[in-house]
Amino acid sequence: MKDIEKIFRQVAKNNNMTVKNLKKEIILTIEATMESNSPENIEILKSISKNGTVPTPEEFIMYVYNNIVLPPQ
Image (cartoon, rainbow, N blue to C red):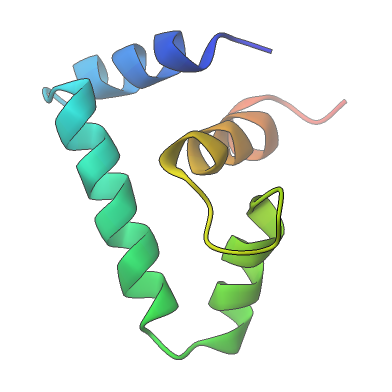
């Protein structure tokens, strides 16, 4: 597993933004999804979190990295 801060730096760099702004964008995306009233999307977000609630930006980015970026093994 890659260091989470390295992942944030790389994603931010790839999107021409700061890590701080990237985390804000992730939070806004999570909040919008939670407010969308889509039970399926809300359940996906809750499944990402270690405690079954709203995921942190770190949990979200690690989920994306481990489940989308890395090839299946």
